[in-house]
Length: 241
Image (cartoon, rainbow, N blue to C red; front, side, top):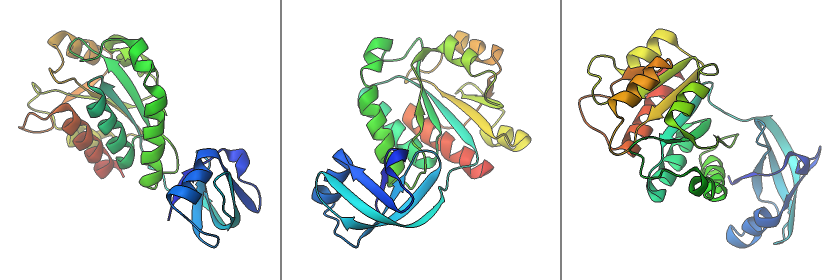
């Protein structure tokens, strides 16, 4: 069943109104017809099923048939991803959204392939669309939050109070596995800091640990950053959900 994030004010007591790009997608791309059922999401944790009564590229109307709470993860996961080439970074946004991440914080580290905040912010409109489409496709009830880019020191300091558990996978950590840390605390909020292609410097790891991040290993293999991001996110939800 097709799912669409729309403004909350377009969801009325008995009727759902789809406008703009959403209406065009329903009528022209998906070619849905009157009588078909789709789901409207208000990005506030609720979803409404409606049966289409009017279909056109400019406006579609649906009669409300069911309202319910969206099935969102109980764990709030912030993915702190060091910036890299566009295709790789966007792939991580998409896949981690599908897995259940609640937010993303682009991080500029010493070895990040992208070093500028301005050029990063220029990509946000595209990235917001990627998050929205991934959330719709994967059955999410909310679009993950995309935070402003920050350098590593800013990023680790700004997450100190909000997240009960903060983890930094590091190839030089040989003892403490990520599952061990998750099982000990069973936290409701987790921040996960994923390093760039060249890894973190020892100084950066020290900065993170001084701010309260815990070093963990993902196993004996050295993973690419995009693999580490997806594996870590999947392990967190597997253990805590």
